[in-house]
Amino acid sequence: MGRVESLLFPTRKERVEERRKERSHGDVRDEVFDRATLLSVSRLVTQGFFQEVDFSISTGKEANVFRVSGPKGFAALKVYRVSNAVFRRFPPWALEDLYRTAGPGSFGRLVFAWARREFNALKRCHDSSVPVPRPRVQWRNLLLMDLVGDAEGRAAQPMIRTPLEDPARTLKELEKGVRAMSTRARLVHGDLSPYNVLMHEQHPILIDLGQTLPVEHPQAAGLLLRDATNFARYFRRFGVDCEPQEIYRRMGGRPTP
Ligand SMILES: Nc1ncnc2c1ncn2[C@@H]1O[C@H](COP(=O)(O)OP(=O)(O)OP(=O)(O)O)[C@@H](O)[C@H]1O
Ligand SMILES: [Mg+2]
Image 1 (tube, rainbow, N blue to C red):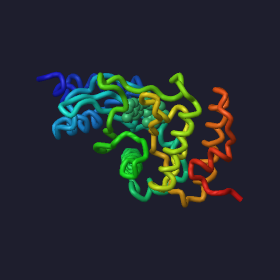
Image 2 (cartoon, rainbow, N blue to C red; image 1 turned 120 degrees about the horizontal axis):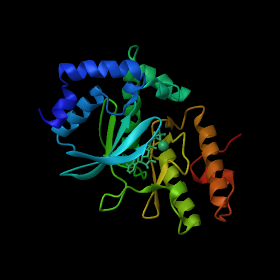
Image 3 (cartoon, protein in one colour; image 1 turned 180 degrees about the horizontal axis):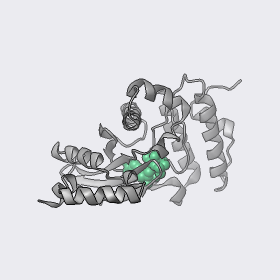
Image 4 (spheres, rainbow, N blue to C red; image 1 turned 30 degrees about the horizontal axis):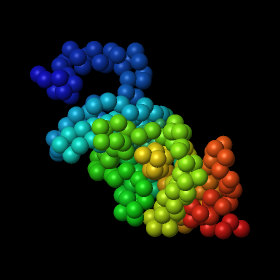
């Protein structure tokens, strides 16, 4: 049996051993590549989306992101954790439509709906020329998208870890991107921060779109204003003269009463 097969189809002895481990570590099911996820990964491989999982780019609370590669070049594979820890972090406005799409039933289905939600938001933004990674496919708790990175496959860093050559210009470009998101894709990110913006050759790319909401949503304006306020604070550190309300307006925010 090959390595992947032995992972996918363990022998009886391994199964017994695994159950023993599961009993001793309650968190075994929190591992990224649980059996079901492994099967989903192998399905995408079989379908030719990629060939190799190269290495982990990021290990987070909700998801792990890996660089993968294949004949179509590099890509980023976001693997959502199928664990209850994630569940508690779904924002209430997203939960409404998650329950609608997932219906009653397993927690896993909610996570799949969450992955689908991010895929749809990425697609809508990409189709409207908002600077986001192009989504390729979503299956269960997997989301495959273009890698934001260089030609050698090195992943771009979040804004928080990138020295900005021209902060004022970066802010302008970021405002333009977010404005395109609100006016053309008609979505508000809902959790935009220097952590969820990657810097690709000094150009901002918006990521982590799971909690986006339509501009018409009653909470959309408040969230956009909150993010604009955080960015105002962030860019002031670099001596950029900016006001939260102005950033909010340039990001396509509607006048607040
Ligand atoms: N398309 C991509 N190309 C390159 N790197 C990426 C891409 N998508 C995500 N990453 C990397 O993975 C990290 C986490 O991605 P993301 O923000 O989408 O996950 P998350 O839901 O915030 O996970 P958590 O909050 O649990 O850390 C990013 O900060 C970035 O470093
Ligand atoms: Mg994030």
